Amino acid sequence: MATIRLMHGKLHRVTVTEANVNYVGSITIDPDLMNQVGILPLEEVDVINLKNGKRWSTYAIPGEQGGTGEICPNGGAALLCQPGDLLIIIAYETRDRATVMKQGHQAKVVVVDEKNRIKDFIRQNLIPQGERVKLDSTNYAL
Image 1: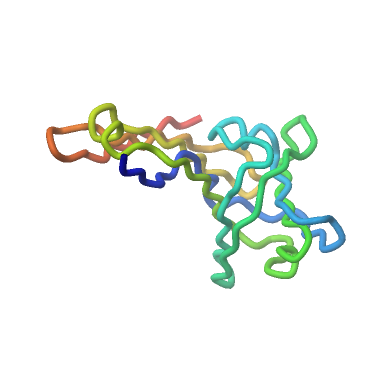
Image 2: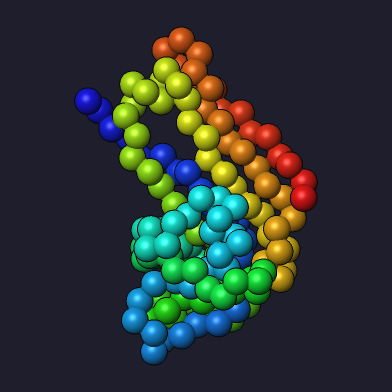
């Protein structure tokens, strides 16, 4: 059984609201954003800082409920960014390649505004086509 790692959720261009070097690891994320793209608490995520090119892996923890827009790298990651930096946060899942080729795959992408409010929701689908898959993106403006 061959497995592949595919993106299943992405938060695109979220703004860092705080960086807390004194917290033990992780990245705190507004739970509404996590839920929209299916990122689970404690799930491993890759984080890319668009201001300085730094990239790291950590785990996600939900922030306060209520649409706060919170994005807070913690621990050592707090040294890789500062409030106002734009980040991309990506979550992956491991899938059986043959299953993906037969049944497809769907990833969810949220694009936010400067206050980390959802402005676009995109579903990126891998659609089986014989021996290949086609990437189809559908944008749902919110």
